[in-house]
Every structure is written in structure tokens, then in C-alpha cells.
Image (cartoon, rainbow, N blue to C red; front, side, top):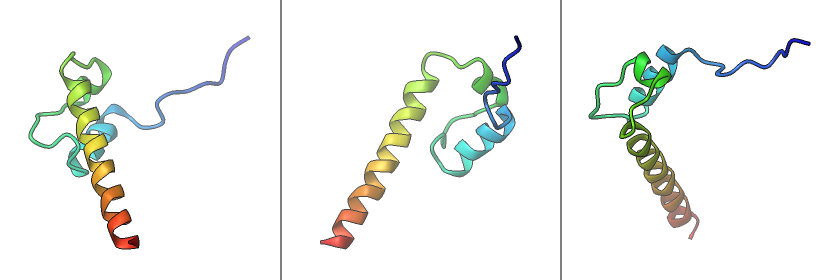
Length: 66
């Protein structure tokens, strides 16, 4: 029985473009191939920038509410 599961919903080009536009992958040369076959140093760099931006937004929200 064939599965209907599909992942990812976006193409690698769209993922790379979104990461660059959101500045999560700024300062790096990110190509669609990097998404499909990432190098060891790419994932920690992208995740750390993502979490840093999340914490920054959360901190600003808390400061606004207080």
C-alpha cells in the first residue's frame, strides 16, 4: 500500500530563499543543494540564528507587556 506522505511542502529553493529573507541564514551562501544535502556546520548555524531571533522577539514582547 502506497503512502500519501509528502515532505517537505516547499521546494529547496523556496526554503533557501525564506531563510535568507528572514536573515536566519544571513552572512552565508545558501544554495538549494545545501538544504537537500546539508553540511555539518550548516544546521547548528541556522538553528542558533533561528533560536536567537525567537528569543529576541519573545524578549521584546515581554518588555512590551511589562
